[in-house]
Length: 78
Image (tube, rainbow, N blue to C red; front, side, top):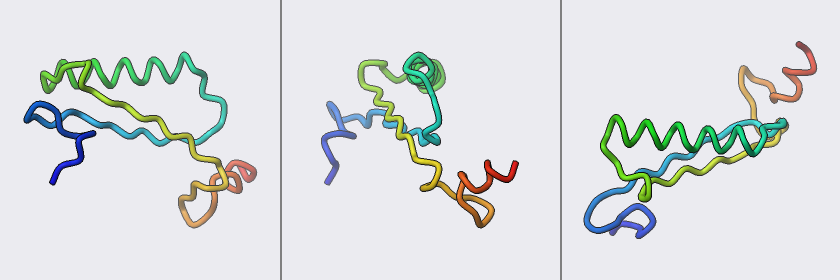
């Protein structure tokens, strides 16, 4: 069974989840990310922009880790 969020008129619609650290990304930058990802899906895959969903999730630095440490710790060291 398909979730109706991903299924429309018998065709899958694009859903892109972008995760970034929460550290000052502006509304304008987020709008540009949404526009450019949408444009890419239209150009490369022929998707309809009105069926394309982009979600931007901002993650607190203390909730994102890599290399065995949390991002806030990494940034404090560098």
